[in-house]
Structure formats: structure tokens, C-alpha cells
Image 1: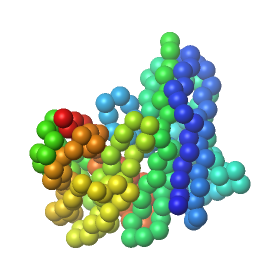
Image 2: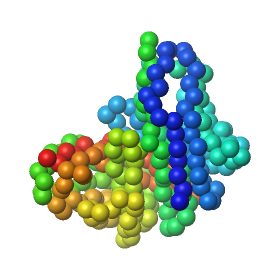
Image 3: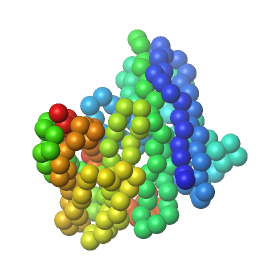
Image 4: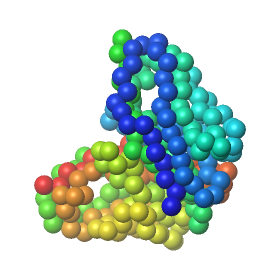
Length: 114
Length: 114
């Protein structure tokens, strides 16, 4: 079945450092790909998405490109801030069936130090 | 416009007790979902409702039941709680088509079963 694998954390960076969180997927169809972010004590918020190969999703300085040839959707940010500290989830949308179901990676905790 | 709301925010149960988690949305979405979040496991789908009047099992349905009361409301019931059901529960809503596959999450219910 479809699955998502993302790098384990925690990832600890200093403010203004470059961020990469790796995500790869396995899917039989043509899924949409997502990054969600979860701040402490809160629910998940959509950070960005891409719906087809070579699409780039971007939001709040974060970017990820849908790479079908490497089945990857790595999250990057050029300069992280303390306020970016959160758990980041990579997910894909399984479009089979009566509705869309999300399949999540295990999440990566990012801690940014001043 | 509250989005997705969940009640209660916190709950402590004893083994064998029952409870219902409530979820309501004002986003006019057809589909609603219940997930549980456990450390190192990401989010796993418990049940979903593609549209009003339908419900289906997800990845981890054992020990749970659901009711899609109307388009706005989707409840999750634990008939006889077990310590293995200690988790954070998230409700989400979204569309059923390819172009509406983004899901929007509530703030979560933190459940402890003693």
C-alpha cells in the first residue's frame, strides 16, 4: 500500500540556519503531496502542497518540490527562526475510493535555538 | 467562522468507561475523518465519512464506533476504554474530489485511560 517515510528527528538548528527535512513516498497512483506543521499543543495546519510532478509548493519561506523520478518531497527553508520550532509531517493523499484519505509520515521535530 | 471544533479538549477515563468525542465543522465539507496521534507513529486514520450518511473503517478502527449525525457533525465513541486508547485524537474535514483533497484539522482531544 501507499506509504510515506520521513527523516527522524529531532532536528536541532541555530537561528538562520538552512533546513532540509527529507520525505519519500510510495504510491501506486498520482497522489497530492503535503507538508503539515503542528505547533506545541495545537492541531495540524497545512503548510504547503503540490498536486503533480515538478510542482513546487511554497509558504512562509518553506518550499518543497514534487519529484516523481525520486519519489521525494523534501521540505526546505533558507533561514529558520525560533518560531519555526514545531513538528512537521509529510503526507500524501490517496485519491482511491469514495473520498480522499491522507497517509502520514511519523513526523519530524524541529527545534530552533536562538 | 470556527473551522473545525472538538470537545472536550482533555479527558481522563478509567478502563472500561465509555465516552464520545464530538467534532463539528462549519466549512461545508462533505468528508470528515477521525485520526489518532501516537508518539513515533504519526497520525493513523480510525474512521472516516465520505459524505453524510456514510461511514467507513480506516487503518485502526477496533474499539471505536462513529456517527455522522449530519453534514456538520461527526462523533467518535469509545464503548469500553482501554489504556491502549490513550492518545491524542484529531478530527479533520475535507472534500471528496481530487481538487479538494486538503484536510483541515481541529485542535485535538487529549485522552488518558488509566
